[in-house]
Length: 313
Image 1 (cartoon, helix red, strand yellow):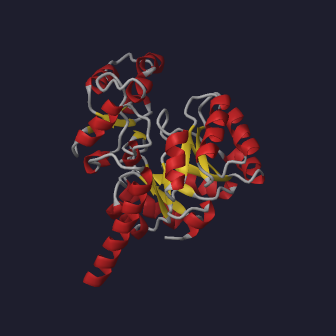
Image 2 (cartoon, one colour):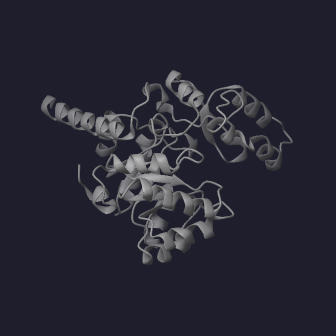
Image 3 (cartoon, helix red, strand yellow):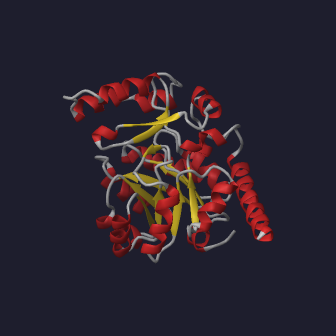
């Protein structure tokens, strides 16, 4: 499974664990890296001190490369990026903004820069800024999303840039991995399936809801505010969508309503009032497994699928 992405990261399989806020911490990141993928710590809205602590904890659990996902809209983003340089983290994945002004400093510190993009224009600008690769994220993903589907988006990004592209959104098994490669991607990013890793510390009721989810059990909230988020349907989503229909809704009012809902889901296991971020592939995820088993199973299936399709042609 070695290719330009696995060689770039120094991992066995070209798979990146999604940077899921409140979810992706040291235990999960280390488990994914130990399993041959690239584990990722999610900085989210946390402080730089928290991120440094998680980096050091991860290093106690693995000697393999791992990354940190930085939300550039966070007030602590610059401090967190400074920590990544000081700690010599292998990879920085970024979201919610353009990391262009940070690329040179990160790369000079030995940190590879892999932004998440949701449109071709941004991808082209970021390639010019010197990033190492791109994560093309389709709207099938859980959490914050763009408008394009993975199927439509990934090949357009691949055609537009000359650096490796990692496909994200709608990948939960070997068929998804194989499809991503056929679209021209060099690797995949997976989030929802890693929610069910045994090493993931998400509250059990959250995991149980993902396991029980069907194909139509996700919904997108926040479209009216310009910040769409895909989550599992529950009482929270009904209230959120109802609130969005208010003609005089302000962004401040909506953000106040959202405050603490992701923590409520991840930490407290509140599956009715919490924000249960999940991709549309939740209906394909049926059990908890060790992260290493998830990875090896996905790539064994991808190889099998590719071999069968070639023989059938």
